[in-house]
Image 1 (cartoon, rainbow, N blue to C red):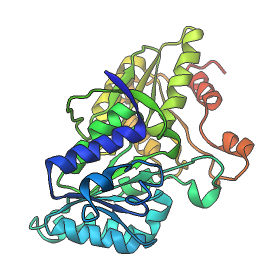
Image 2: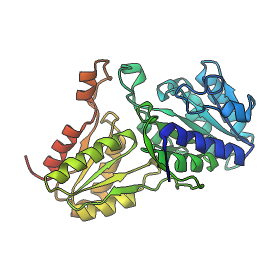
Image 3: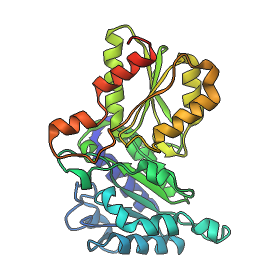
Image 4: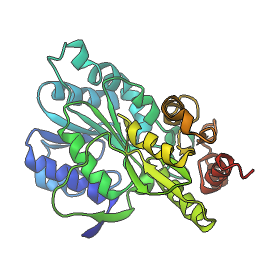
Length: 326
């Protein structure tokens, strides 16, 4: 099995689906002539031409609306936002059109569209380019929200998203585009809504998704040095959520820490905490503890970014809390 970058896995997924289905096309800022802001779409214009790899003006509301309209009329667009921070300009089309058209039409129309791009912190980009929106979109009935953490999952999930008949939000990270991982050459799909136990353990369950999986796994490595066996779960999608895998793990370990980059209020971790106490209360030996970003706009200074975002130190402290080591 070969090792490729996260961006290459995304490119392979889109390229394979565009070869398979002539109704699939890619549209967004700098996706064509510039080969993508993060070089995800490199070479795709040469293969598919300007009718299927389409550069747009800096007008997210406009090209998101074009994508939604074309999806309702039978095409299968992939709409790239240079960052999901810019998706706020287009949020009316995403939530009031794409997510609701099937319900409002009584099932007569579907909207098979994928909105994809990076989310969250990407270094020294300050407040307006560093926010997480997974929980915003996951709060919207009619959308599916997928957040992969590695190249293998990114390719298999994106292919499933492109084939799905519902609108999908596919969230990446600038900080992961260069990450390498093993990806098969043969075709494969990963079902939407199926979490993965990436590390088995017996003492505590750590749940995360997206790039913060790196924090969860690094914390599990540190815990192992001290004889604590952590089970680590990658959600992979936050709508739908695979509650069954999490509940099964908590019933085994009796403790849970959830690590998430978003702010704490109304976060995915809030929903998970409720569901765990609702369905596994009698199995818990300690209250669920969450590790979120501090409730502040992200600053520019690297030292402050490190202090505000979830990190290994704060995750270990959370595990100490549920293990009653404090």
